[in-house]
Image (tube, rainbow, N blue to C red; front, top):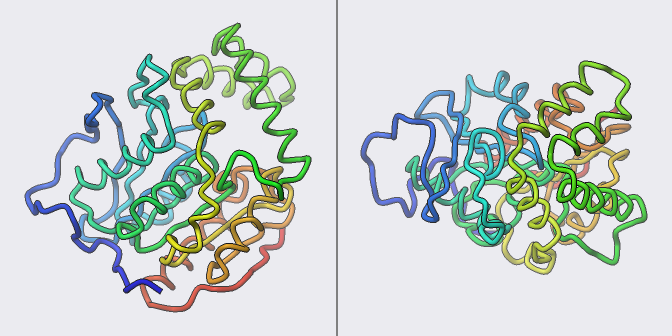
Length: 302
């Protein structure tokens, strides 16, 4: 195992001045990234990365429960929420998303943090972890996969990806408002359906298409997991999630990880099972702080 890295340790930032007051930064490629920050300034920093087409609001339940003990940094990823969406699709890649997180940590003068990512955010977190493992005290990947293609992925996973590719093609032809209407058509709850229409209509086409292409074109980090991820790791997913098969792919490479399986839960645990997910996350963070071994598999019943 790598030497213990305490959450919040100053490392590699070289600047101990006051923290910036405005909740945004301009990246080195000129993109504005908006972020939410709450909790005590001297508390252990935890960065939360949301999923594809979502925003920092996805973490509402977790922020409410954790801000008393942790310094929470919750960005809108490029192309999402209040952050900028460059028109050039060449500015979107998994490496670029991970670099955005790296720049955010430097901007906030955070040397080492706990990094938590869900779905697309989990993909970015994995890329960050294999690139800059020294910046992480621990890693949490929920509802995530280490590669777009893998021999161990099942038919449910592939069908989901085919549907998402079809949505991408539809958005290119009919625009984001059209895609929102299409996705909302099969949602019976009128409140949820209206939310879907509004969310997609508000998203910049370049942000959606850039992130969608990033998901498909990202490199396979599976061969790097065992060597690079020496920090404590928590892997989470629901057994009803089409992405669930990817959990075992990562768990095989990370025998010292804690694996949490949520019975009956579909994709998006922080929203699907907010109370149970937050409890598992909090316990993991507390165990990391205490230096307690995290390895093991737990099942969270419905």
